[in-house]
Structure formats: C-alpha cells, structure tokens
Image (cartoon, rainbow, N blue to C red; front, side):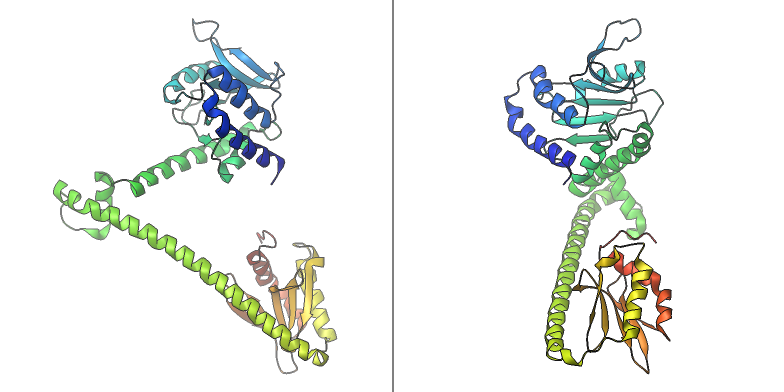
Length: 364
C-alpha cells in the first residue's frame, strides 16, 4: 500500500471516530476538511496556495467569499465550499454554483468533511453541472475512488487529464445509480414495458398488463443476479479445486520422479529450448525468474522455480517433438514442432500464458 493510500484510509477511520463530536462548521473545517487537503499535498498554511475566504464577486454583489480556493501558479484551480459535518449538502449546491460562474477554477468541491462532491462544467462551459462527477464518503472509501482522488493530489494534478475522465465518472455513477434502483426497487412502468417489449409479451401493454407482470420482472431480476453470483462463486471454487488437484498431481509426480532421478538426463537440445524461451520473453519479464525442471515425461519451464506456475512443457523425442502451453481458458494446447527453432513461432501463446499467470500485464 502506498503512502497516499495508507494515509487517506487512516484519515477515514479517524474521521468516523471524531465526526459526532464536531458541532460547528469551523470545527468541521479544522478537524476534517483541512487535514483532507493536507493529505492531498496542498500547503494549507500557505495563503498563496490554499486561500481561506477567497473573494468571489458576483455581479453587483461584491465581497462574496468562498470558504477556500486552491491556487496553482497563482490561478484558482479548485473552489471549496464547506458545511458543518451535521449538515446535509443538498441545499447548498446553488451557492457554489454562483461562485463557479465568476472564477476561472474548473473544479468545485462541496463538503461537510465526510461527503465530498466534485463538480465541473461538462454540460456547459463555465457553468457548473447540477450533478457531481465524483462523490466520496471519506469513511467508506473504495479502491477506485482512492485512484480518482490521487488525480487531485498536488503532485498529480492535471486539468486536462481529470476533465477527460470526469465525464465517464459522472455517467458511470448515474448509470450505476439507475441500475441500483432497478435491481433493488420495484421496476417502474417504463422499465417493465421495456422488458415486455423485448420478446416477452406480444399483446397490448395496458396498465393492467404492466401491473400484472411488474412483480415477475422484479423476481426475474433477483433470480438472475442470484444465479450470476452463484455462477461466479462456483467458477472460483472450481478454479481453486483445479489448482489444488494440479498441486497434488505435481506433488505425486515430483515424488515419483525423485525415486527415478538417476534416470533423468537433460539433453543439450532441451537446454537450447530453454534458452530460446528465455530469449523470446526477455523483453517482458526478468529472465532470471524463468527456470526449468527436467522430468522423465517432459522438460518443464516454470516461473520462479514453481511447478504450479509452469510456463510450458517440452517433449523432444526422436519420433515426435511438441510443446504444451495452457491457453486463456486453462486448456492445454499441443504445438507439434519439427525442430526447436520452431519454438520461436510460439511467442503469442507464451505471452498469453504469462498474462494468465499474472506475472506481467501483457498487451501484446
């Protein structure tokens, strides 16, 4: 866990512990808001970078103040409006909306010290969106939210980069919220009618028909989600069982080979095949991690000297030569070769196997 991640998680735990003891907006700022932005790398004690009571003149109204403004290169980059930890945020968006339209900052943050809502101008330039593109609860942070918060760290802050991802974040959140309502609440008329129109019911969709089928739609969604979860669990259990069987198989095989170790002779051709595999993969992994183990049945090439992380198995006999490599579906594929030079043709299967082993992130 990196320093930022550990600090922000620790702060979330502390915020949960102290939030009920904070009674005022000033206490919220001091105990929650300022430490949060300090973790994001901003010098909260430098009034030229983190400016309290920043002036935001609005039309004929002069002297309007936003709680804080973060200045980068002397230019306002983020506006921060704070409320008491005991106060909900829903009724305050309009105030921040007014500030946003008068300043150059492209991001506005509304917070009560626990909830942080991040706004920008995706819908209309220089006009703050009504809905935030990111909302976090500091006491229950998810890993993907921590990744998004990192982008607002002073060392990482890049206006264009954040704006490019803000749209996806906003609409992913809205779609997820909609799906949550569909899955957890009784489907509305429009969604029920959409399902019925998808080849389910051919007749006229009167209100009585929609009301009749609505409970079935809800039940079907619940059953489908349940089946999907069970399928994933079963798949994980099967994968674990296969891995255990493979380990047991390898153990039996190793014990058997130990008794016949004197019969194993590693040939020059097998060693050459090993060096060919290392040559193919030298740009994708530290080649010192590629090892081999010779057996009576085959010449195995492994990762980190672990038989459970075997990369390929090579059989080189006088009458037949072939290479065994597991594909993305964990099925063992057999590649017949005429000579070991043809192993160079197996770069893609070998790279796919590396990816499956989670050794590297292979994009080739």
